[in-house]
Image (tube, rainbow, N blue to C red):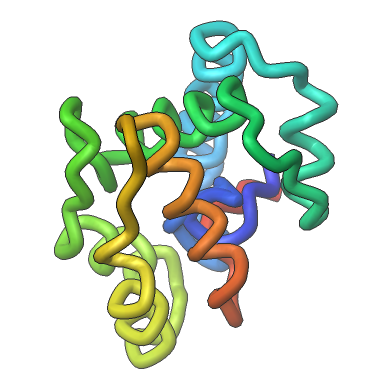
Length: 136
């Protein structure tokens, strides 16, 4: 799963230092979130390559699911800034770049938690200079 730094995986977790167990867990989350959101797996693959479908509610809900499972968002859709930074830095991403991306994206909003998560992932993708949620 190559959700560009954490996620698309999209995601906020650098792949540089992911263990095989962590990669397996991320893949487990991806599969569960694909099922839970009902998103077309090809839409996720396209998003990983930077071709994000605009206003795709299922993709936005996939983002929320992933970010929630990783711990970057809570059940209410609130961003856990410290967790986001911790996970990205623990994954091998440079602290200064992580701080920059999180600072730019931490105030992202949306009309619901799925849309907020989709907007957050879009912000991460647009501002990243390292991999956020890649497992391969």
